Length: 277
Image (cartoon, rainbow, N blue to C red; front, side, top):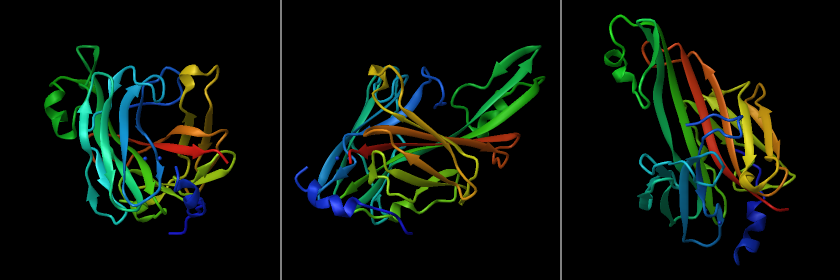
């Protein structure tokens, strides 16, 4: 894979320095992971990570994004593990020991179903967290106007220790994925970053994307960038200013794997650190 990167050129400078949810509404609950750093030097380091679902990005005030289900992919493709995981009332935390130089991928993939139906003329919904194999027993006999939606959501971030690598960007071919053209740990304010999105391993055109700068709780107006992927599945973003950004892409199709589902909702979230020039 060819990838544009300036990280190698900046490595010497860093030698003395990781480092359920809809967009659109200022009050929307957004799920996020926030690593303490994403760019580190040396051959061994630690980061700590917060996870939450909140109104204000990177400011926990609602519900924890639990560490259960978090997977770690090391630069060589082997599996890593989080440490010191804890789940609080409004946020979760965990540590990660970076014991291998290169780019790491940390995150989770969740799937589930959303459903509604009418019973005796009244609108009912499947309980939150319902799974595909539970649908049949959760919908009572006599129900009408049944609507089932499959949801597949990926939430991940990337951390680089030393020189950047690209092995962790090999797509799985399942759901909505991001394969960067510009390395995600090499983003600079006022410079264009390019990302390619795939659905089940194929270029995903028409994917709507929103990138929002954290810290909006203290800003008069949120700093955000919107884009839509082209025929190659690519989007180009120029970051207005440095900081931690929450990026979400979402789309839908009819390629469901859940019996009775007519729509598959696909989501992708990542946290990106944009550095000053």
